[in-house]
Length: 261
Image (cartoon, rainbow, N blue to C red):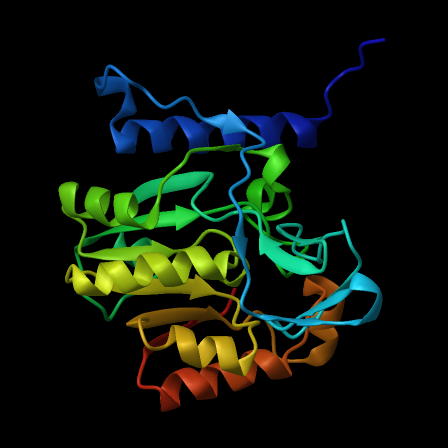
């Protein structure tokens, strides 16, 4: 029996469709004879380097402060990492659901190569659940819920150069959840003379953060509130790890801007 679509479902459908259409246009697929058709449920995997094996085939994720303990066949809080036979895999490696060419000021950076454009990437998923999220249509989705395209790290850098971008931005959702993809794109971008920038909630563990800082040129961190109560009740997260991220970025000499959002 058919049922009516809710307003939230309608808006989510419209938003994800727009992301796909704009991504396809930017990537030039309509101009090619072999157009890539965005696919719903596209899964691209890569083994995560940040997990600890536990008894009974369980694992503990070491990427963000949640440190999810995940049983075989299950996923972590972010929805995009899965325990497959005792190994922890990213499900969003090279399958972004949003690809745009944005002004750097939209990231938002106001003291970094102004008036330039940034090739911007995002996948489904997030490690927060902010009640005020403006990109909830993709941040609160699983890879199966969105339309994605296949873009390898090499292809991302090539396209960024073709469209005249001065930087590649990891943005729209929390980029920590597609860490492996961000890092591999970042390594190639740096070699190609592009800046790597991210817009992040800052909820990442120290070891992966310091490793990321080797390729990261700039970060804009959302300092969403100033109390643990705010973070717990409105973001389902914690304040202190975000403050530690700010300190680490400063120590690692990554250009840092802060947004109260």
